[in-house]
Image (cartoon, rainbow, N blue to C red; front, top):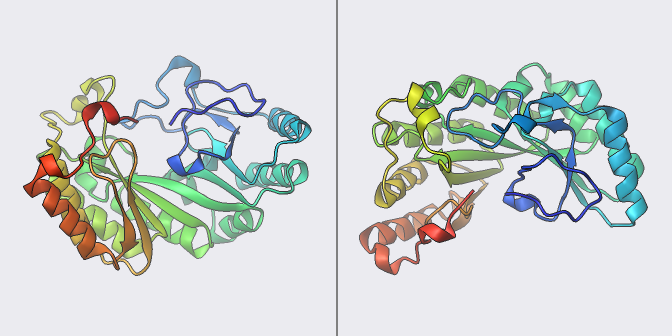
Length: 300
């Protein structure tokens, strides 16, 4: 979701943030994504989005301007694609600066690739949590190794599970994103089943499903995934039902309300599992009566 210019910061567009960070200060600490090789993702492919960390003095200058503007900031989101790729030392310096300039901030969050966590110990992650990093949005996309390989995610079920478990142990809230449709029609079921298995093994606090979208076409994706066909609306709903049916979660908030989804779902797993499944099956049986989003209503 692109941001509005509520704060005195010069952003390198486009800038993205999770829907739940709509009212947060979007603070650039890196530009682009350090991996940037996922063939389904176009977020940071523009030439001006080439990955680089920003200097501490530039980050602090932005914080000083916001503090001087007198705006009350409660939440900060560290942009861009994977701020957690920065060293623990640098992240601690950024978190300390946020506390210094904006002492009223209650929560700092960021996107986080599983690989960002591999080189950080649980003790380091706990230190970051205590310094204010309360939540990360982890783009796992799939729990299926074949799907992950075909889309060049650079992760596996094992690497994603290890990262989520480490973050959980450190006391950092995890919001995991799974991409419905990423396995195409060919791998739809194993994508759904193994993504649910990843969630069951790691028990994240939040899980969101988004529908994979290709505003610029599928050419990049098909280089490593020949014959990829995105399931139709009914196929996507069937895949979502398969994913939810296989979930065994103790107390996870589930959201399927991102603008890319056809059917808006919200609940807590597994408490609301049967209710959500009934809603999906009703939509599959009678799509014209289900209040599905029209194509023009959908987007990234």
